[in-house]
Image 1 (tube, helix red, strand yellow):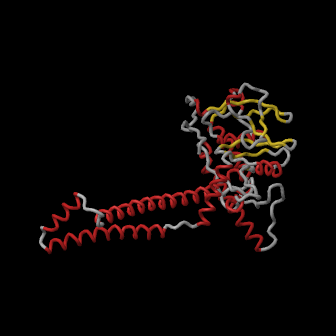
Image 2: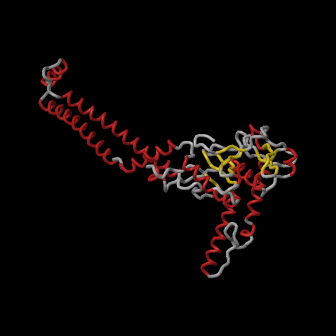
Length: 369
């Protein structure tokens, strides 16, 4: 993805830290607390920073005191804070405890079927934790997520998406289709990657058909030229006379050979035309598939900002008041917050480090913020 960061230093005591591995802190007021948020530089790992800022605003993690004193945090320190929180938040499951729905009491096995389901669910979450811990370093270089267009929390499930689940952070997007449009028929059940694959497949087929049509046109032109060359003219030209004179002095057998060659040349052109037409017939376009791909292409172009009016409404309806989550848009991750019915994005750009009054921006327009 577009947002990436470099994490090559081991971070040993006494070793110089690369400047691109250090991130500035900025203190902002947040419901009676002073919260140190992490600012993103030009190449900062935005998934990790969005997650860390979400946890800091929730007051579920704390940065080391040394970071608060220097007003910077090292990228490996940040990764450790997130990893430790993930393990702590899922400690009961890792140690063999039962699993319950967030905010509810753990499940109790009251029947063999329930016990079996409980065991399977527990083992699945343990595996997810193990997988998530192993891929946490990918947060340093950016992660790929694959949104679906039916819901603002719909993403293809991957190990990367599991990280958000295990941290109890809702991952949102606002790239939804309007149910009243033709787009709904073609994109409602597919993910972004599936849409792109369809369009590419259609485009490749179009390219092959275009190439064959060009070959057919050339073959037809060659065939016509061949016919005109050996057709009887209205009056003999100088070239025709020379050909006739040459034929007249040839022995009878050789004249027959020349005539056969002319016929074979013309027949060869006709055969090539027929061959290309047969190939074109095999590449005949599926009209329903072509229509679907044109609609998909129109949807992707019309919603290139990856935020729609329908998506904005869905975000406002789905998010709880004062909920803090992560927002995905155009390969970028931001910290998202709902307050008094409005949606806000945390301003974490390092360019605003000294602008204390600028902490949040309203997400209210599909073309901008």
